[in-house]
Length: 259
Length: 309
Image 1 (cartoon, each protein chain N blue to C red):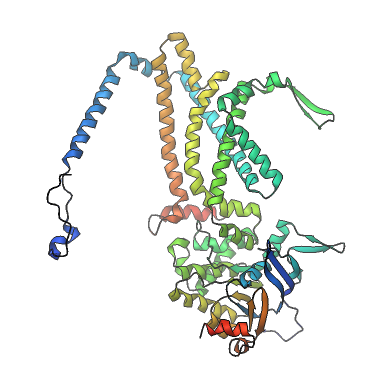
Image 2 (cartoon, one colour; image 1 turned 45 degrees about the horizontal axis):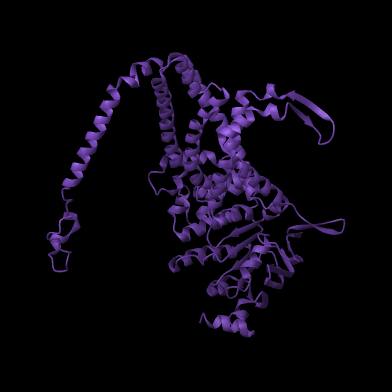
């Protein structure tokens, strides 16, 4: 990496609150994520970790606090000292530097693998088609699926689909990558190939936020582990501390199930 | 059938005998008899139809390509195409409005669908045709303000425009519901993914949602198109010279009612049969991603081009 200048956080979350009707899902999340950092968010189901991830690119609108990515507040702007909601198109523009990988892969089933990957670069980022195709082929090689460029998603296994989804997210050259339980919908024997791809990415200076249940991945690849429970961050730190020597009783209880 | 000696396969049999690869289908006598009886009835019916002079087959042949009939056919086809295209475009807009979170848009769309599906097409056509009795003048003006332009209603609403407006608006109401159903059939994760990748709503609809919705939109739309061809015959009541009107104008002169109606029936059947073939091709195209390796070779080339815009 470059010389240690004073870096600003890439993601800054302050007092983030989110409620679905009366159900409070996030009860004040504060988190800074530095460029190049790999943060793994752990926590039991219903702890709000996926919701928090989806708030970062405004798939869910938050009800309180604020989230900033790359110096821009997500979903809002200040105008004459008043905060106003951004238009849908302006929000779409903000999302263009954030890549996302979903639990259910969500590849476009009517497009081939190659078309899936170049769709956003060509259609949203205005890249030339030949550049996008060349880049897509490089990415496919990187996730080990070069020979599948012309296949349709349905012809691939779950693990292959998820690796294509990762390549698709990388194709927009994101500053930040969000992974929403990327291995939870996979058969156990397919989890490894996806985690290997992600581990590979984590070594290349990409900023990643990974919501997962894979403790081993957190231990090996994370710069920092965040443990959430009941809509709050209860513990965070280096993986060897949070996973190896958890302080909070909730973290201890959660981790004990994986031993 | 007869309760003779049919043993359930029991675990005692020899493995060689019980290999299903050696199985044969027993001859079904009852089935053959049924086939013969039905074939007989069909041939007999055909014979009756062909030999009944009242059908007037020579007259049918004589008038089949009559210029009046052919121009009526063009009118019917033209009306179908125009009304269908307008209906699909308008239907798409109404479907999107109906699904919108904007209260005004969704209730306006619901109101439109409620009215145009809830009244008979024939009545709507007559209504449009008689527009001038309701509004003798059509004018463009600012509400409660000055008039910008004005036309005599009878010069605007000809049988042609009344037919187009009537058929298109009615079709739009049905297409809106078909398209809405199609859009709803696409997995929610797809629009979410498009959103997460920074696509605008319009682009997400055009590139991601609508192509997937097409699979459930095409079959009922084919139905609608076929209904539309037949529905154009309703415009004969407002003196529009479509296929039915043309054959009527001939039999009013010659009194050969049945033969002339047969001319129309055969044309309608011919067109709908061609459309059926077209529909199955379109369905195959939108189902291409469903097929496993092999059969999908040709559509891939077409799809790659499609991705370039």
